[in-house]
Image 1 (spheres, rainbow, N blue to C red):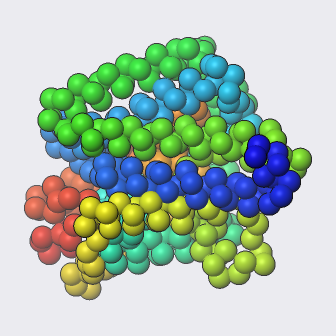
Image 2 (tube, rainbow, N blue to C red):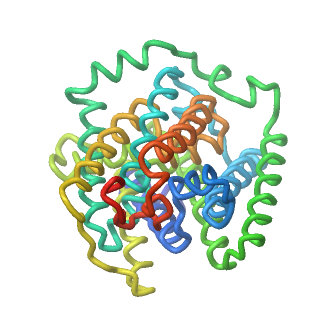
Image 3 (cartoon, rainbow, N blue to C red):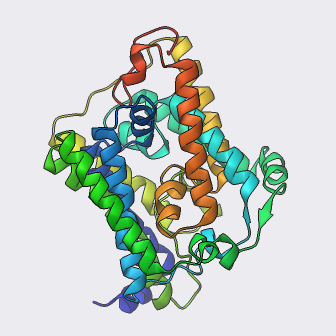
Length: 366
């Protein structure tokens, strides 16, 4: 059965949703097994210890770049109509949103994707934090926080098309972008070997990046076979988390698309990984002080992610893989804010080096 036949039988929206479930499940399984986490990588980097966590993130990022640019060069993919490139963007939103997201990521001990993955392993802290983030994101998108978001994004805007394409701005081509990705793949492999990262871990880390590229390819392929316009997109979590929440609350107001299938798909893939490897363990908050920290961080991530137009994965990996200018600005600001926030609130505590999602060991960090 070919793609056109599937679309004719179930419709464009459900087809995209099913694709979202499949891509999300593979991403969730790979992220759960590799411990993929930008928060952990940024802390390791700013502590001057470039090792396994940086290698995992770098392997995922570089693989996403290589596969995505490879698809473009072979003519299988065209991302020119993707929102991150085609539509008018906001540099003020990318800067401030990235800074807010990075700070919130440190406070919640995990970015949006990591919280979803941890939720599936029984981490109730991550589940509650993720729900608060989704509610905040929805408020920033279509609720009480919308006027504030629109005001900030309007401070410094840039046109779509060439103005948002970093390759065009720098006068480079997709071949240069592919070479860039290959170099960073080599660097990731170097750090993986140096830090004695198990082969299965860096393999699943590359799977995280590979699913980002597959997300772009799948949505583009469906858009070409659809009779109605279909959005070309890939893996991101702030907006889809908000949409999924609203879909659960009021299905009559939502439409089927890739994002609707993505979030439950990631949850299912992560849950499968946790159950197969006996890592499903129920965990809760340590105390009220800890809960306040997570909630504040979740609000920062929810609003910051919507302000920036993407999260650590949506902007940092998916947007970075297609060289969207605002995505790279957001990624840089996330890293910067993560380093500063870690130094200010966690640097002197054991919790600073705890595993992603672990409960802080000291009162100051909790």
